[in-house]
Image (cartoon, rainbow, N blue to C red; front, side, top):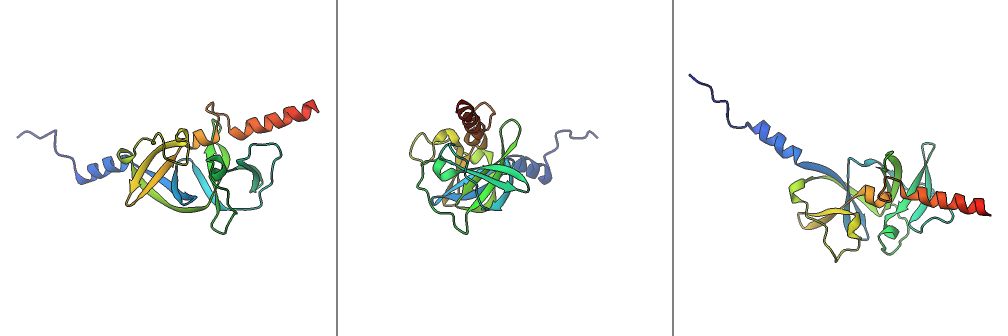
Length: 182
């Protein structure tokens, strides 16, 4: 009797393949639209503490927060994406992400955080060329979940300058250079 080496896949094998196609995303709201970061880039979500402004940085940089003794730069994603600015509310949060070559902690100020969802890589569509409030260079893609479209954002493109250097570093370097010229 010969054994069948090409036996059909078990249910466990099929489930493992399906799970390999799934990624988790943290969803959040900005100006009534649903956005998401890959959970692989998210360190934590914190309530909005006092934010210390840094003079002469780009408008979308809100300042820094003290996160357990470490100064973490905070970017206002509404301002970064050219949306109307609104007041911080009880639902506002800062999503702490890892960005840049060194995995530096950066904060993203958002209107509210929703939930973690699993999204199949095969269901992600390329970013549209127009018609969104967000520059598509910051988007990894879009996905429809139920009745809602989620805009999947690329943390590296939002928080770095394309060269692995965190965006706020250039602002701080410019400030230091101006201080040296004075």
